Length: 198
Image (cartoon, helix red, strand yellow):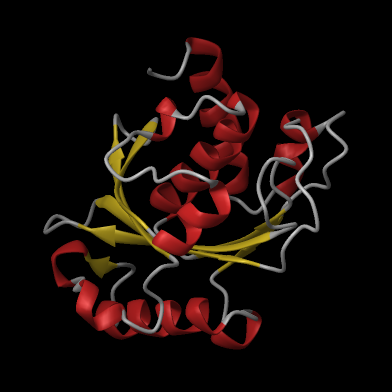
């Protein structure tokens, strides 16, 4: 299921503003949902990241990219990411950043979410279309800006963690275009009991 025209427009508009550091762009998506706005942090330093898995991934990505803007997609080796495996997604950028394909969806992430999205598109996610726009905009902004993006956000109530810390790292093809994302996503705590989805 592709994004609707309205979802595409919202994704583009929000991503453009996120790419210049305007976290307030997310207000229309989260307004009235009793969930605080996510925090965003461009080009985080390792010391900015509380989760050791995210610190590892940032240092791994920085080592691969050297002086370049992004690490090369072909340089990524899952075996090299053992300290973070389970919390890693590899996501292909589709349709110019209007959809994304989960090539790998970490098993620990899947456990918290309650489903494994490996082999699906972001646009296939039907639980919360408004949350889908947030994810698509963050992924698109990182690919567009060609920079690391750290976000922290409260998920919908059907997810077993009260907060996600996420690191989005764009990966380049041989022409320097962002074609894939290396994403680390670590839960911060667990909810005592599940509630009905928002």
